[in-house]
Image (cartoon, rainbow, N blue to C red; front, side, top):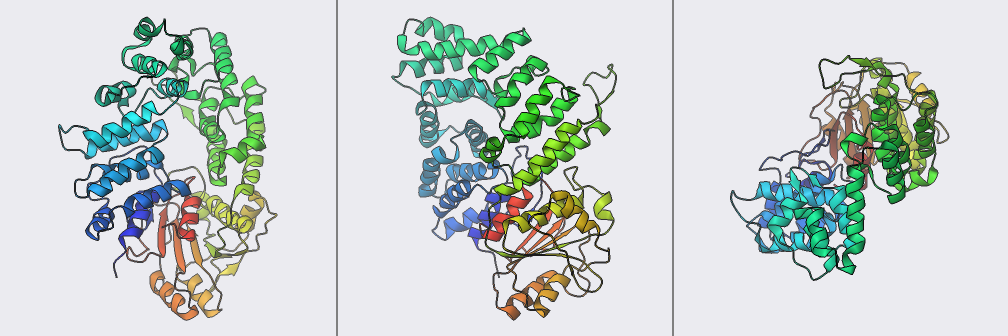
Length: 525
């Protein structure tokens, strides 16, 4: 049995591989191997080429992809391939949907150029969509974009405009394009007497004054007055207490969580520092939480990173400077993060599936670390379990008991700490990956998704997990029953069969793991 190209493509769109294996990475943009999208080649051969773009747009709309680079790379691949003209046209037509943000636009440029033949030009389709991207924005929106994201992935707006040559009759947009390529002085000289260009020229003047401002208090006032973002802040102001005091209330919640470690390193989260009050207000803002769509896993990772920040040492770039011990974490910030973690469970949405999650509770789950983050395996297991218990109607939490899996009574009303303590109470024993599936078959327990969570124990003592799953599907007539194996402390392993669309391996842990499992359970890939 071979895996359908649609399934392989959906896997790639969600986690960057056509095989059923998710490996959390730092999500730095990478280069993909040439044969990473054989699924699209198969769709072209089957005369279903444009279906690839339909899947890309749907994955983007569903919002389950672990990182946009996977979607953007697939779109760029479709746009630059030479086999199917309809696919190329469909990809360029989808550009305005997938690459609406500056980040994704820069990503597309990077990947499209890498996928092009050496010394090849952009072509009409590529130039058209890029020109439309710039010219379809309102002048002030374009000015903000040009100043907020000046360059990414070794490409700048100036580089792109020199290749795309956009032309417009709109005077204000002309002024912004002039600024991007030649700078503010040239834009003011050419458009300073044009009334229509005055708002954007004034905005660009203000941004330039902010970026070159040396007075920290004045910069903070400008940031608050003009609602500048973190990306607008120049490097020399990123160590300013006044600037961060003004900036914290403006940060999206997920961005604030990622910057807590930076604030700790700058020693702005000590005692009753003014930044602390701003951070606490932001973490306790329920409206911001609802708008952010932050997952409990992201909060847990931020919490663990901050809790451990006092045990780390900061090594300055200059070797001659002293290595400093970072300050101990502020108890008020830790308390606010714990409260935020509990609140974030309310954002979870049910999949309607029937789950059995089986947790390894051996001592190693408390002493090791998840690959790619500071979370302990048992903490990750408790979070995965509690997410299901709070979001779903039919969830059975089990632990590997002596001989058979043992039920663990987790309730919807439990806190994360209570769930973690409950799992700690379960006696540890040896485990067999196939045992929970065999137990469910024997007891006639109907399960749509089995989830096994361990640190690195991946043996099937008597029966291989794939064989147990096939037998379960047949015995209980649940042909779409699925199995997810999470080995949290290893970078790589292989339990799932690449040819079985109902199996998934997860190595390590990051903020996207629960969403990947949710998408898999829903049948998104």
